[in-house]
Image (tube, rainbow, N blue to C red; front, top):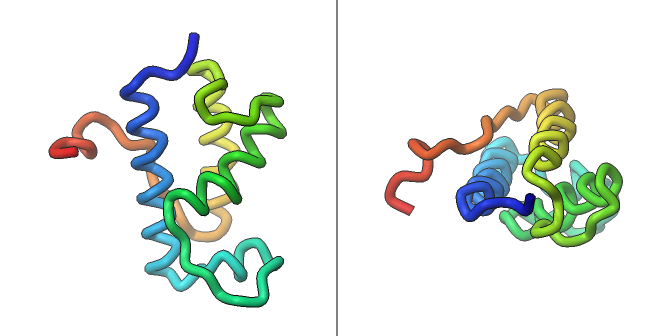
Length: 102
């Protein structure tokens, strides 16, 4: 079963929320990934490509975020959320109430 439209909206909303929180905490891409010489702020696309996608590929062997099964999104989120929590960042998975008006 592929992800639903609701899951897709939640996934991208979460990318955006995490990127915003990391920026507010001054956690640049350079600080987190330690591979860049120029400090770059996060956005949802960078978070997706630099954090979500590598974890997704490692756990599922699937490259596109449209490919995992619905239960695999939970596993990917749990792994990333555990790592983010160690950095002092916790953004819960968006629910229908947090997406009102979008």
